[in-house]
Length: 125
Length: 421
View 1 (cartoon, one colour):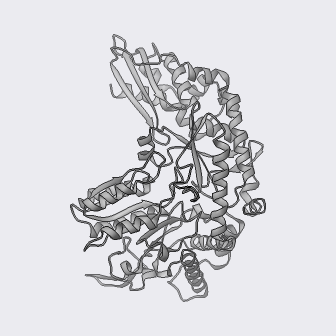
View 2: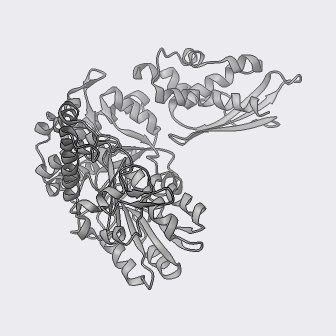
View 3: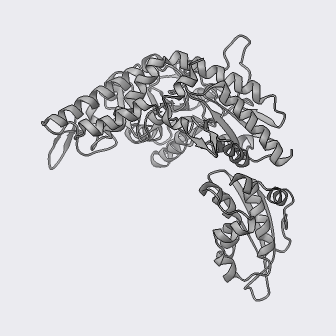
């Protein structure tokens, strides 16, 4: 499992994350913390005109390779995606995004942190 | 050093392989592994003697009561306490909560002050925040210096200024390994104590496994410990309370029901005058108490003085090896306060990796069969104060050897390969 998680693509993604940084004119900002390790993510979401899709997204965070790479891949994927579809995203979708077949319970929390932040942002909008 | 290789063979789980590598267990501050003696003691209790204690006249109940009392005696003796001074709890956390409910709630009044510190485990921190909410008492925090040592000068200042009723401090930090001097703390308290007594609670979760503890010599009013960190089973620990506080009723029961009573009438209940029974409400976890007694016996046979020496050598060896790795920064004391003095650090060595997050460090070490802890180790106030997001901690037990630390160092080299840093 470890070799799977620490492939070069994942490490590179975490080191050079996509959509990193605050987004000017964001409609929603939301933060998510993993209380078991103190890792944190802040997401900035801009909605489309109809308010049904994510038009643009930026994020900042501190965390392990898994949480950072997962959030980075996710930030690219959810742009233009409808809220309904975003709310349907699951652990399996994120595993597929990261290219890992299995993940331990403790690391699943790291992987899911970004998605939790986005879903919370849409819920609280 | 203890004969760790021989000792390892007495702990069945240590023969496991993780990711096809022999397990190197360095997460002992979270919980220790259990020797066969402890596992057998628990199994023997259920196989041969199980019945409720202090309840029946039949043979099994009698045997169970005898083995329970004997186990309590063994545990109390291990800590240099009278059996009556031992209240069995689930763990150190519950023991500290016991002081909150059984002592603080009826002793503290609005305006009284509780002192604790920045280096505490949440168990000796959140409990007091909650007590303050209930009683109107105020919480004062003693800080730490740049090496993670308790600021005794700050403790002195607080003792001079505030109407303090309780000082609650950790004995050995689970994050930095810092050993607090109970002797110095007590001296300060005695110097400043006026008419009302200042009680001292010591959180011994990380000292009980690594150094000899004699409750009477220690001089604290309360001492809390967890059985599972000292080779015993999970779900059992204890609170030692100075007898005077029990006899005077200053420390009173906080759990009520069967077993702890003397007489129950419709209008009122009288508690059991037998101190050993007054704090046992409901059926206790006899098997775990038996298991903990077996662990105490095992540690006693090894000799706690030798165990402390063994631990000190491991701490120094780990510090020496880890300090040679440029990416690693040790947290907590690395040099003794004065030349020639022992380093005031026991049980563990935690560090920051400059390039790699603690979770990633721990995960890659796991792929080499090495179990370590990563995160804030339930010491968020300390981590926030220093700005550490997460640290990696290696912690020791009697079966830990220098070879295990060598394996750790090799594991850390793999991190370099994976991250090419």
